[in-house]
Length: 113
Length: 116
Image 1: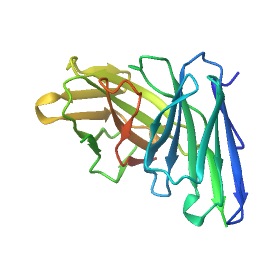
Image 2 (image 1 turned 135 degrees about the horizontal axis):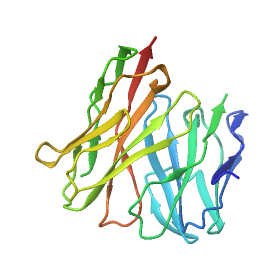
Image 3 (image 1 turned 30 degrees about the vertical axis):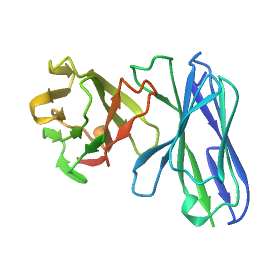
Image 4 (image 1 turned 180 degrees about the vertical axis):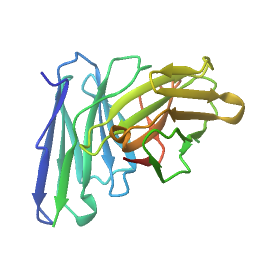
């Protein structure tokens, strides 16, 4: 009965590969996010979608492509993976007209070898 | 520009000690929200508190208390009588209401270790 669920939780892959992380929320929220947490624990927003529309696109390489098939899902596809992409990726959601907290998934740890 | 600074990278205390985690923020907006999140060793991000810029009342929740001072742009977090289970990384974060995007700006995090 997880509110925000991400799959896979762990992902180990080789440089140059393409991989996807999926996120689903069952909270009925309109806005979803992807955050990246680097090895120093620093959390930074990557993307935000509001009802399938992209509203935030921080300075992220275009190898990263979010896709939102509906407002309950926000997937992250990464092409040509690099060592520096190794991180924990968190999906989150919030209701529209955001004034409250984000609801985070458990995170997906990506390791690029 | 928005910025959140948590100057304490790591803090180590012995169980039952009180500990305060500092958070200083920068924003040009008059309306904003401040948050604290906890990230235990298991890795998930746990929401602790939200405070809006017009509410400077301190808040207490069990052993946790928060001190918000607009004059010094600080939103500090105190754990009273710390316990081993409090060991985690704690993040302070800022959100501007004007942008209405829900974007959170996080501080660098403070790693708290509570030793038995």
